[in-house]
Length: 190
Image (cartoon, rainbow, N blue to C red; front, side, top):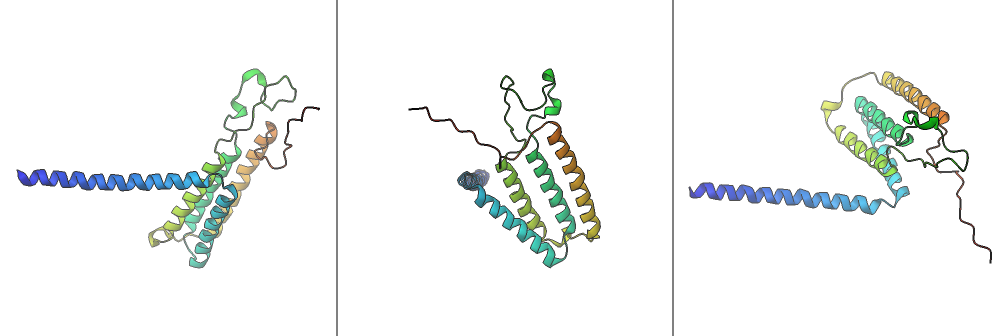
């Protein structure tokens, strides 16, 4: 009887320690993400270095082409979600006003992405880290004729981007803010 009570307390105590450890780890991870949010250029440099590290790993190891292909398709999927508006104008059937306003009487609807920039970056970083980890195990190094995968990826990229660009032209939206005019309130005359 006495031993059962000690075992239950010990397992509850160890469970509590594990729970606190992972909770603390989650808090540190979220704190790191929160601190990195305003540093857009630094985050993207970090992501670029990770992807470059992954590419160098693949080139020097001469393998893991399936992992590379899957990672490329996932990054393409993230990029398309980043370019796509949150509210698809093709599904907006109100008074056939599917494009951006051209007159001052029309409603202004700003471009809101389906996948925000921060989540796009985070998805690329997480997937690249997972890809790097997968290259550490030989079980993921499936032999494949890699030029076929490159050809498939280029074909998929061209078809997908063609469709996305047609969508952007048809509904007249530009997902990038670089080069767009910035309006400032004029100072009142003194």
